Image (cartoon, rainbow, N blue to C red; front, side):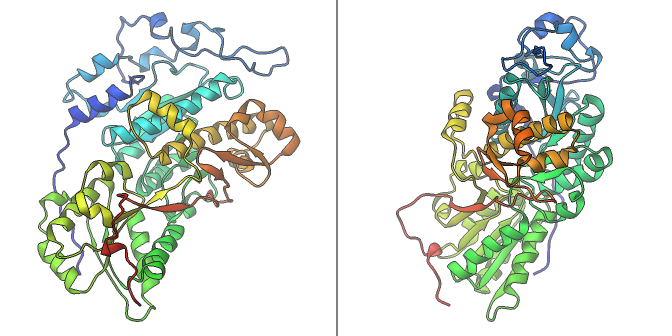
Length: 495
């Protein structure tokens, strides 16, 4: 079947999205290039966490940061920042250069001249509920680090960059984070295409450590093999193995159709599934590639679905970008005749938005691959629930917490023992003495004794190999809808 690509305009109600997110994320502020001369410096920082006091030995104290520096000493150059209250921010007309101001900081943990700054690239305006959860998790990790001496006495600050899940925007923001705000590491972005672009344009040429919580493309192994780059989730080869074993070996599906994007994640998954089925007798795979520029709601796919069903397809695999998954599921509901097929959705789709879409009976046939923790942490869930009235799956939130902690631990050891960041992070997430996030205050003494660790976090164990893959990461297949029924789409087919 020929591939297709339509250029359309995507309509987004930005005002509503930003208001929802910023109402939830009540501790955030906006960076901009101009300055409000009326900002009261002391008032702006009166809730900031200050630099640490020191013991005579030079080791950071284990107490929370003391007020050892005045607000003016800890503040970054005022010529580069303007601080706004949430009420001010949400009432700025979004037609006034809003897209030029996409980097935020917490109003209770702001940048200073001596702070360690990490950049966190996240699709705030595109997926506000999801973003609020992962930002909260990163902030909690930073808070714990700062309560226990920071990174060798320097307070950790997280700068949130809203890339709208847009690849060119991700790289532009990463460049600003490094050049304007001196970030020393980057967390994110969410998609393999965006991570590849940030690596190529920013992280590699400027030697900035980078860790992704969700990018899985095998292309990233070649790009970042010698760079301090890591990913928390399974790579695409592992995902392909899981998908094909489930569809063919466990459920007996011989004819599969793939709704594929044109990005590197989709292309690798699509080709891997096709290569798996090709040598197997009496099997068939086909696909339709759809550009991420396409607004699927405007496409008439009735003839395509007739042809798909006529070919005897019993399973659909969807690897489209997040914003296209719900529209293609609605097209399936509209045009599929008879019992729905088995539907597998790749890990590029945010499960929470699929659940919230209330898709009806088709949900019983949908299974999503989710980067899964060994155990969902009640502690982390409770902390996030206290800040936001949301019910979260916590998979990405757990990975973000651990990614922040691993970078901070790695930088602590790298600076103290003259290691590279790659050496330091790999020593933490290795085969050695078991540690967890709560061992951060004693990390230096533990390293002197053990040299290598086995990190166990909210996301489970993390063990990086030499090219940054998490060897013990895995994925789990989750039904979208819990049901006591036994729909035909979930039955095993006879071989």
